[in-house]
Length: 302
Image (cartoon, rainbow, N blue to C red; front, side, top):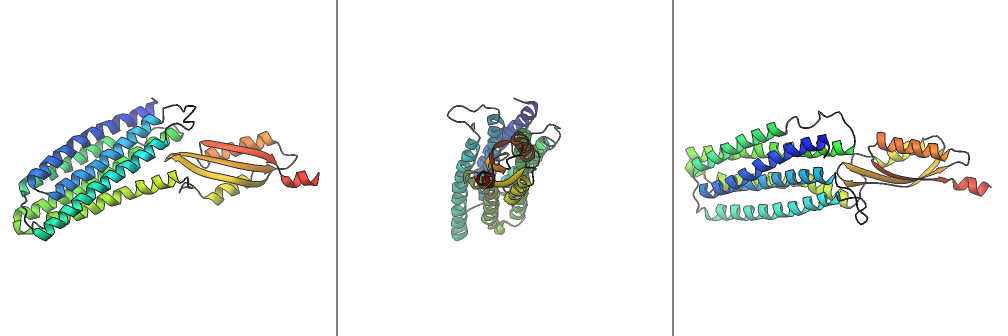
């Protein structure tokens, strides 16, 4: 495993281990405290764990060679795994929303504010530690290439997950304080559960959107189709550009195919070399297939 990947792997393994352990602690603590908000926070931790695991898988799979059957390798497995995890998270979130509605309607529940407060406080500390573990693990390598880019993407995503859960744990802690001093305000627990569920759902939307873009082989959002087309058209010797396709194998792994029509006196090898350099350096397209062909107008003229 390359040094940059090994560095990301260690950071993500440490964060995932802590996340899994505390997720179990929150589930047990939330059950003992009678707090849906704490258990919903555990569901958010599950989404964090899934994000970390997807990141780990991405780092691992980037080093696996393609086979005769899987000629592009196994990069798309990361996207399929992300979609599966989102489905699980949505099901859990739906269950917590149902339970929160039931509590609001019946109001026959008790909250142990002290236990709720302790678990939430531990959650704040754990998230701060995870943030410190992940902080600085990206952006310090001076290497380049799609593998380093993918590592940065996954570690940055993990940092965002931790930040979201830190905010949620803080909200649960404040709710516990309110319930401790004003026990009649226990309704704040299911209300906090709703807010946590919204946060969990919102945190999955970017991953869902990105996964759909990849599976539908859309033009990557950071690329402008017309900009790539115009850049290729401006190359010396190129008369026309057609059959241009831009897509992502997985986030951080971008590809392109294109046909370039050139004049009869153009140096095809030179055009091919310049086109490859342009697509790789300017647009970060690591996998390119370029067909250089004679312009139909020159053929007709003869």
